[in-house]
Image (cartoon, rainbow, N blue to C red; front, side, top):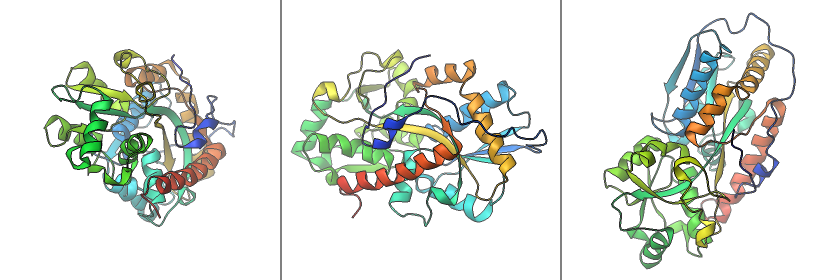
Amino acid sequence: MRTHSISRVGLCVLAAAILAGPPAGPAAAAGFPEKAIEIIAPANPGGGWDLTSRSTAKVLAEEKLVTQAIAVTNMPGGSGAVAISHVITKRKGDGHLLIAASPSLTFTLALKRVPYTYKDVTPVAAVATDYGAIVVRKDSPFRSLKDVLDAYRKNPADVSVAGGSAPGGQDHVKFAKVIKAAGMDPTKVKYVPHQGGGEAMASLLGGHTVAASPDVSEIVGQVEAGEVRVLAVLSEKRLGGSLKDVPTAIEQGVNATYVLWRGFYAAPGISKEATDFWVTTLGKMVKTDAWRKTLQANNWFEYSMGGAEYARFLTQDLEAGETLLKELGFLK
C-alpha cells in the first residue's frame, strides 16, 4: 500500500493526519442495521463524491461488513448544500444513511450557502485523501503549467476553467491557489461551475473550457485513455501510477498544493448504536485489502479517523477553510 506525506497544503489542519483507525468504542449491537442502507453522493455521477460513495458501498458489501442492501443516490446541488439541507430537515434520526463529504462541503459551509455547520450533523469517519490537478485536453496548445500562467497573465478571460463545485468552492479554490501562488489576482479566474467532476470533465473534453481543476481520482480514466494532458499535480511530491511522470506545481516554480480528505457524515439525532456501528465499520473497511486496492486504483492515499476525533477535525477544517477563502478574496 502506498502512503504519501501530508502537510499543511493550504488547509493547515491536514498536518494532523492520523493513519490509525478510529478510536475504540462500544461494539454495535447485532440488531443494527435492520434495513437497507442509503449512501448519498452530493453530486452527479462521475465525480469524486460519486466515486467515494460507490467505492465504499462496493467494499462494505464485498467484505460483508454490511449485510443489508446498499444503494447510492446522487443528490447534486450547491456543492453539498442540497444534500446537507435534505438530511438535516428531512432525515433526522435516520441511522441507515451516510453522506459523502470533502473540503468542497467545507467551503459551502464557510460561504454560508446554508445555515449549518458540521455540528448540525453526525460526523462519522474520514477514509482517504486525494489531490488536485490542473489538466487540459490532449490537443491543447498549453504544454506546461507555465503556458497556462502566461496566458492568464496576458488575459485572464482567455483561461476558462471547468470545475465540479460551485463558485468559491473546492475546484475554484484549487486553481485560484495556483494563480495566487504565481503572484496574480485569483479573483479574476474565469471559473465555469458544474454539478460534479464528471460534468466538468465533459465540458473540458467538449471544448467548452480550456482547462479544468479536478481531483486526481476523477481523471484516472481519461489519463489512461490519453484524452487529457495533466500539467501539474497539486501535491508536495510526484504521485505514482499513471501520473508518475507528471510534475508538481512546486517543481514548476509555483508553491501551490491542494490535498483533500474524503469521508462521511450521518444525519443528526441518530442513535448511539448507529453512530458506533458506522464509526467501527468504516474503521474496519479502511484496513481491508479491498480498500487498499481501491486506494491504489483511484490514486487515493491512506487517511482515516473517526468519531469524536473526526468531529474535532471537521470543526478545525471549517475554520481553516474560512481563512483560506478570505486570503483568496472569496470571503469578506
